[in-house]
Image 1 (cartoon, rainbow, N blue to C red):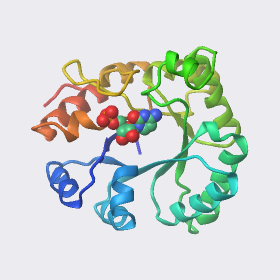
Image 2 (image 1 turned 90 degrees about the vertical axis):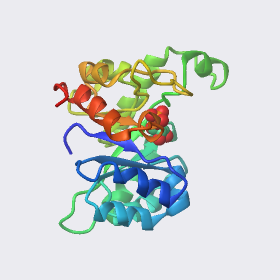
Image 3 (image 1 turned 90 degrees about the horizontal axis):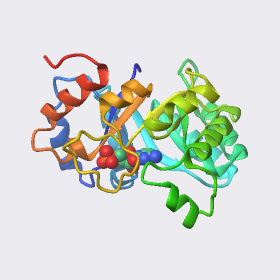
Length: 239
Ligand code: C5P
């Protein structure tokens, strides 16, 4: 996987998901399956998407006791997906257990799925951090400290806002993966996202991968918007 643009397949209906993907039948795309699709369609959807040879990020954001996370990750690794994630707030023992579970479930000769940690959701802002989560430190510091904990725990990277990527590179090195949702073009509805940037800004800030959902899933011409966003992300002119 090279600097993926993950399309978030946030659908609750198999027909709608298939219809949406038909727009991309001539493209090589990377996809993200989140809770909505996975809880609705389960393993069947994963098998179908793997068969279509998409790179697959299963975004279930595990956050539970270490034993449960380890056992669950073992099951997920058996599905041979490319990337999974946890909440860094689950702590070091939980993240280490996630890696142990993934290693245990990876079939011989196959690569362990990459595992990244959510630092702070891109729908969180500093006010919410203070008022609701009772964390008084600046959001950037919290994100960087979660990223370092994820690295110490053996994870491959983090989910964060692109705005935080330069600081994460400083603390964790450029090899540490940064996957950044909260991607919008100027004309898009921000909706519930707070820390947003455009695909071009994400590239300039050094994101390794980006996640785009509603700008594509709610577009009247998803392929056209995808091509625009993809060329911005890759830094090449639209052909
Ligand atoms: O529609 P939108 O582009 O905002 O979708 C972003 C996607 O990325 C959603 O599927 C959301 O669950 C996911 N995500 C996120 N923030 C995180 C982790 C995942 O928005 N920190």
